[in-house]
Length: 76
Image (cartoon, rainbow, N blue to C red; front, top):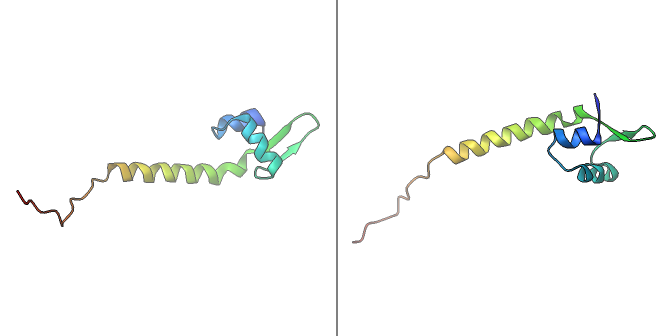
């Protein structure tokens, strides 16, 4: 499904001007219909999957307690 630059920017939580810069640089594939750029939204499926996986890993990391150092000695 093709979306406008504004819709794409909202979907991937990125400013519109940055999306346009990525289109010009070739990092985001888009077609120009004579008036505006249209972006195929299926190219972001992997991006969304990786983003969710990273969020889950960060949450696991935050909830993991820090182990006590075994070399700590009480010298009082």
